[in-house]
Length: 139
Length: 204
Image (cartoon, rainbow over the protein chains, first blue to last red):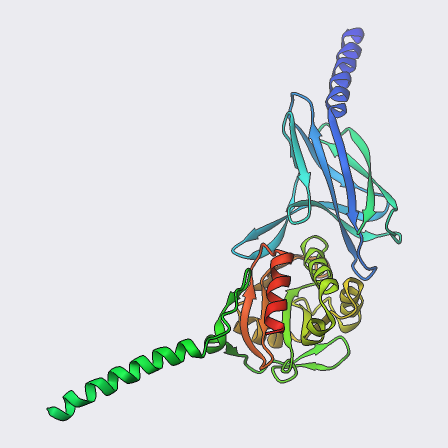
């Protein structure tokens, strides 16, 4: 019985591991802003190369007090930001986090950020697993 | 009866004359690529508003006379789209010649006076370009200007008095050197086309 449980746990952890490893992060960057702005927007491309659905449910960074997932929505010329509970990663699809669309809303920088700096971000998936991503501070 | 008949050619001549004159008076038909142009006749005199710019000087319908003004309404706690518009301004202004820059004032107006003040706005806008001006005022005074120009903005509901979103129109407002609201640019904003239009208008 013990062996069955252990092998089941192992099997699942392998599956979860496999899922997470099918997620690819690219072109991560943070828009450089003057220090008076107490938040930053982060952007990147996330590709799910796997055949199963995945989801990012939380984002954090040691360089910020907290990070939210947002989407800027433009309707009738009005721009507003709407907080998202997750970023859905459909199988074999890319999600683009870009200016004027989905983005990471990174609140209260804990450090100064110069152009060229890299900032670590930790993505948490629906299964609780995490991945580290580096975002570069750019103009 | 004869008199009435005799007056017909006069009336026709008058109508023709007016038609010719109206053509004559629009010799410089300006070709605009991006602006929604209200035209001289439809241009709107702005109601009295009083904001304060980041030098501590008043910004009113009187002080905006003498130059073209391009106004953008936003807030500094807006990290995604507002900086894009500010970058559009800085890119555009870097391409303008001295004369255009002297005759056009680009102004950022904060619709979030609870969090924005002259000091943080100044640091924010001058980061993008030293010639961009910022201004704000009480919500009532802001509303006089935004109401007259059709700019919508509202604070999103939030339990947090420090962290909240402000929904706002991305439209740019243009006033002429008489201080009248004469045109606007609606999103999506194309920097190349807007720059072309402004150059034509400011130097016309």
